[in-house]
View 1 (cartoon, rainbow, N blue to C red):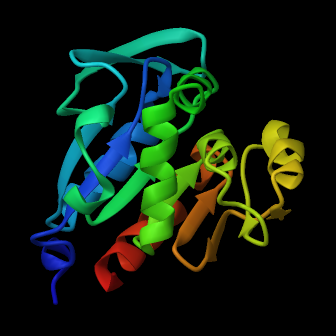
View 2 (cartoon, one colour):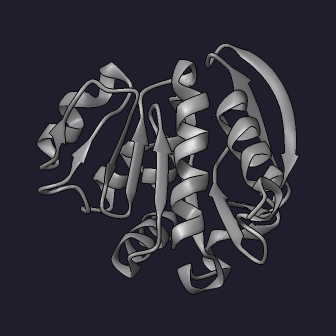
Length: 183
């Protein structure tokens, strides 16, 4: 199987809100599309989301494909949760976004979260007994949510794939494509 066919006929949701870290959206999206998958941007509101560079400088805006309140985990084959501090903080405050993540994890479909993205996993209550990694500043939150937190570039625990920060994007993207292809 060639790389461009690994995710053929697979539709991957990226759940994000204003404040997402641009590189953590763009590189996983490019990896999925490069492997033949289709990506849909799902958000808490219609319109566009404002990306950021290191939570400080405005990046590009990206058009939302679906409002999270109008889709279900069954509509997709896998889920990506990019970071940035603002983005997951907004997502974890939205009941529809939290339920979307909870139902994805419960379905057994793969869920990949990077940097601050695992905050939404914590809010969804899906971390007890799971082994994960994240950006250092949220590790206590993840432990308090019941996870075993380690400092590794990428961690796979069942259907969860987690990574620490933009520096880990190459291994994160490679791993998520591999895991999405096997699901």
